[in-house]
Image (cartoon, rainbow, N blue to C red; front, side, top):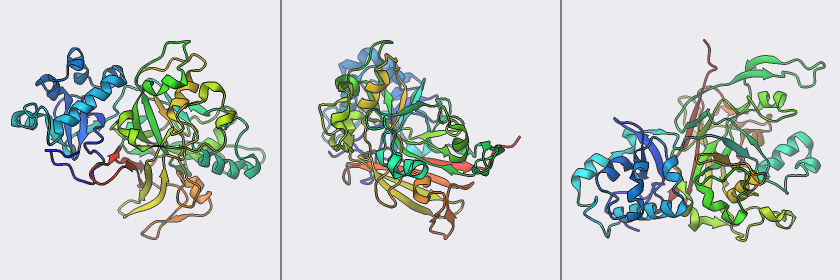
Length: 427
């Protein structure tokens, strides 16, 4: 698929992708797509007649002037598909509509902006955020650390996608720095009595995840059937579920994570639509659990995961980047449609803009883990390229997550998921 518009061959925002996001430059926040090293301002494009050859959106043009993608997402997958295909056509070398943009220098000047000149924002108004635990290898590795190999996985793990409700207000776009969290930690877990200390987190970790945004809501009391669940998904982003391990260790019994997770969650600002990921469908980690699933979780299509290579990179303050992990999105036991079906089986009503995290995506070999705790066991540090070592993150460290599938010239990717750790906030 060739374009009249210059797109670097190594760009994750190829013509095969066309991800959607929210940007601002000199104006208010507006919807946009990423194309190569530029963004197309969809508000300017739509108000200048850019969609005049796409009747299906003529009565919905107002969605492209909103400060979030919620209204566009709520139009549903068939509309998303037609808009994406239309925009692909607009940028194709042999476009059917050259008068719209290819031969319209004035619109190009007003609507196409270098990515270096825009500010990215969280693309959706997120009402609720749920983080799942579908990374089998991560769940096993963490379980071994705390319970041993014989009891690593809880009895429910291969029967349902385990999850907890997270905090939507602290979800931030890539590039946002976060203060090191502070809270109660137990300095000596073997001490008796166990008395906590107030302290900055000493075991700050990352978690490599994907996440999906909900497009089509369901009514309260009406579960989403597994066969229809994918049509309720708008698209995917990369996610770093930062984790304060020592705060979590003290607080999580009996109700699970709280302050250990709510200080910040980083996502990529460009939503890769489900249709863009279709070419990368692959088998996930069945691990023999398909027959043990109850009928409401059984999918007809075996290829319910995506073959997306993933990377984790750490750069210390003033240093060079160190690639510490390579994984793949295939390392999930449950799919996003299964998560939607399970989330709603009680009648829970998901809403447009809700975010569902996958859980940490780890492989089975060394240097494929999606968290530092798995890599180091809290005892065996990894070495960065400058010779410094890490058990967990230090102040000034920058973490970059990447996910790109496809081939040179037609990559489908999310862009970098970046976050830097600042010292604890002090008044």
